[in-house]
Image (cartoon, rainbow, N blue to C red; front, side, top):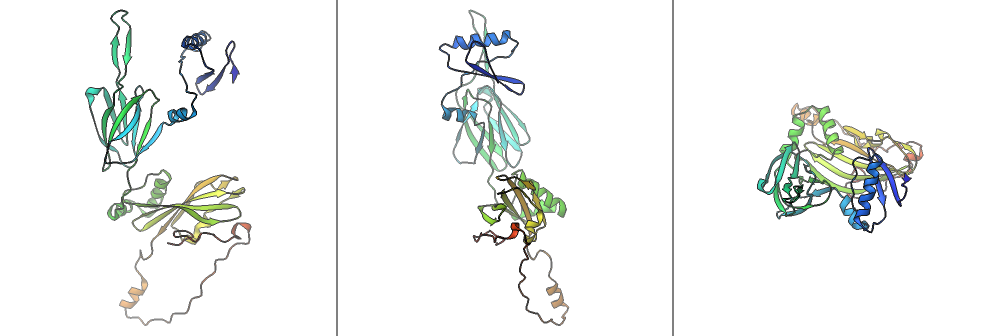
Length: 336
């Protein structure tokens, strides 16, 4: 960053662009004069833009990603009047968008995305023959079909940058749809695809989601929080948040007590304060036929059942396994 000559301004490079920060100008012409001087020094594309000094309003301007949940009433949203606005369907492809073309609205559908652009009206000054563009300022209605939901929106054009709207689809448990997820895949592919879906926050159809966000275990080196559970078919996925207290190297065998079908930890090496995500998939009991039923059908003599002693979990003699898990709430510590 270097200081510009003749003005109390600072020049900062951001990728292929340069951003100039200046104090207040008494007249807008002063800012335009500075822009002309920059053009003379080799800066071809120079644009003057007013930035609000109010932190709250600046924060609202910089918020370009907005999440929308389904509602029976119309939802008001602020869209950019000059840039392309993106509407992203979280679970399925956008099947249809209904809007009024005569209001100068253009829509393009591409998979899970719907791109909305306001077409400016070309205006020619009769005296100077100068051509300018006028953007629509009045609100307009737009209806987006995302999955089984229809989002009824009323868009307010604003002089703001392009915005992205995430259309959330509520998770509705459906046993048939969840079993279809596993029917179309092999066992190994099902585990892989289910883990990737949880990482990408793209929950498969028919799965139920239970948010927990409760402490699960605490050790000298790490804290483990059970974030949520995903249930579908005969499988259950648990997502954990692991935060390091000291520099530590994690291992998948931390979750072997869960008797998992698969374990995935995104980052094995953590520094103090760092957090990573872990995904553990288990299979429900009684998924396979029992040998007891088969023996009973063959009328084999029942064997004496010896009293089984409860096995104690042998913790390694390292500080990592010295402390006892502190979680006793429902859904933690391996409890159903």
